[in-house]
Image (cartoon, rainbow, N blue to C red):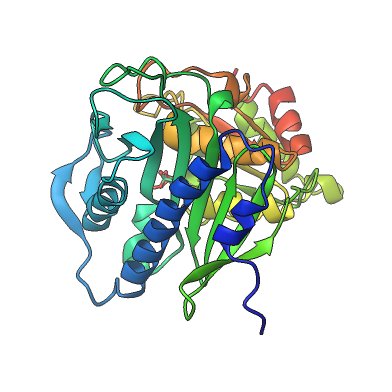
Length: 331
Ligand code: FDP
């Protein structure tokens, strides 16, 4: 088997990226290291004592040891600062700043270190989701420059820990996917400039929550499963890890949704977070010809007002997302 093209080598061939290639290479070299460390840890997960820390995070969720450890891996990976001066994580209440005075060409990395962490104890698929935004020189603790719409992300991507570990990313010049060759310890190019099919045959959603959604969301799912013809005969595929469910959409088309819950005691803005879940995967969707929408608005147009804010999401093939919107899924 040929050793193929490594991620490092592939980055050197990139032009028209949203940030200087030298900075892209420095950041992706760190992401690669993080991916390799998490992959190694997950391969030992059953042996290494998982479970909960006993703490509750900023979202009121019980923190898994792996979530906390994954956050530490990011903090360590970027501690040499250059060119990253700030981190925003699902696992930290506040941003972490390595420097109180960001310089020219400094960046903030936004991430969910272990996405789908309820899968950890059953050896199910997991992910890491990340995005990179530019910091304004002179900024430190103030984060106005980061609370800008997702359309200003310079890099976005995810790592999928499935039977193989894969890294998909975009720096504004298409989506490329790499597979970790564990013997070489390198991510090798698997698919370049991936295009999402305009429609698919599957949908992904936690359908147990159907009774809590807007009428429109219920009608949309009833329509695509009404089995009158091919376009109304979708199959349900739900891993419970956003990166894994999105990966299927990216490769095969279809839609992932996490609607708002309007019923008493529900999640009125859905569950998933804008800055380090929805915006990064929406950038990948768009770069591949798909879409990411709240059901009413393009995800990448939303400027966050707080770092952990949530929104409903309908993401995947352009045709399914447009169809969902036409059902007024969010009222
Ligand atoms: P998890 O809470 O297990 O980390 O990031 C949140 C997330 O997983 C997504 O990865 C996943 O799509 C969703 O929540 C699953 O939520 P439900 O358990 O409500 O289906």
